[in-house]
Amino acid sequence: MANYQIANAMLRDWRGPFFPPALERLHAVYAANPLTESSIASLIRKLEIPCLDHGQEITSDDYRWFKCIEVGLPVLFKICFPWSKDTERVNGTSTDRHLALYLSGIDQLAVDDSRLISTIEKIAEAWEALPVPKQYTGR
Image (cartoon, rainbow, N blue to C red):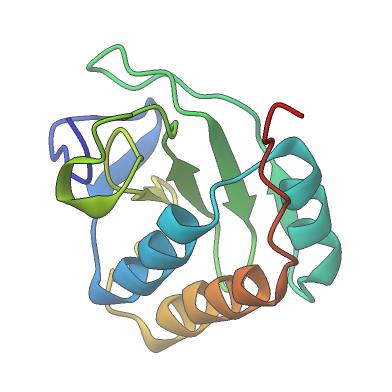
């Protein structure tokens, strides 16, 4: 399965998953340049917002996400990034599924809040500015 939004992939103590339109751009950027350990570190350094690499998370459908980034501005939310292992490239991407957004259960932020959308857009812009890693050619 690739690029599918899994609406029943719940994350303990978080609301969601949500798939707002702003997440679509970030997903496209990620699908074109998948996350690596070094790119997540570079991304966090470039962001001028409180951001933490939260490692892997497991959702209610037993999916272990590749990485989740926890962002503390404007309120606490997480963006989870899927693995890029779909070698058949269904829907033109190697991602196992679509990125997902989770909101803190404490804050009652709306998914369409302009501060949240702006923060997601900043993450996408920072991602686009990352250098594309060289592909291994086997030589």
